[in-house]
Length: 437
Image (cartoon, rainbow, N blue to C red; front, side):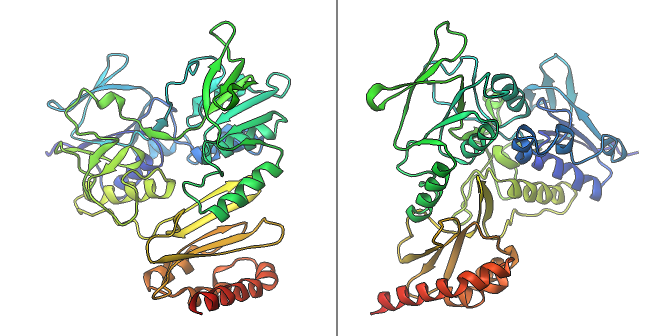
């Protein structure tokens, strides 16, 4: 009788869980899913809604507790501290160990800090893991316990944390190094729109501002932050460090698994060790894939990676092919979607077309190739658009004229189309006429 192959997966986020589910759909292999964060998979993107009171913790768990037993997926809630790649053994923090035949690293990310003085203090935290949400409830349960919070870092996690605290009437000072919010990602027009929207919510948004130190009277609890500009001190009871994330790979540094910023993988997610793979936020591709970053910290790509690797592990070798780039987020009341590529500064030979409404709550920004008018990507703000339409336009190399002529097919909201479509077309015609004059 053949020995049942054992696949161990470290990490029960979207990548690891998707992988486990699809291996089970396609095989009878033994599957073990390991995590030290939470016994069960949960929706990380919904953490903010628990704090805001829109959801309860149990609502974040999409699978019933007996789902895992029914699907013969063993769960282990422990921390892996070492991998013996020679003998295929995982060593846990409690000195227990586990043998495997195939190993998948799906360890995700951890917050990226920059060794500021005082970052060890109580009341200083990130917002990524379940434990971070628990800490937030401890440090900022209500505005009586936390009159002011300072958030450092102008990214998506930072604006989520600002909205969360704002719903509990906690005053928020938001420190952003750049001249506009997220303008390393967004073009200036769009970055200005989001910057103004954040300020309208009553957030004390400080642009071009740098954290110098986090201060305390007793070396235990935060009392203020100092900023480099004018050496100003801002009193606060909470500091949210939301300065990005990095792959969770520290425990691999003494192993023979090749790492750079992340775990280095090929197009099949193979590492340099024959029976070890990596997917999700911790994986770093060793090859180029268009404009995609080598490390993709995006929910939907994590899901695709899990589905793809499951095919390979079940005998159908499959290369990673994620299709056209897309993503979505929310800046307080403004929903954001992006399809294709719209860079903060147009690539050589490209240009941007930008339109916004008078209230500055809705906007689109399109990148296109000047010589051919080829549509390359779109950012939308406050407008919910159909993914399928833009996927088809990008695949068939449509022009910006085609996209705008058929914009009704992309838009979910007939009222928006009736109110704003004419404005968008007129502005595009005027700009295009000037460019060709």
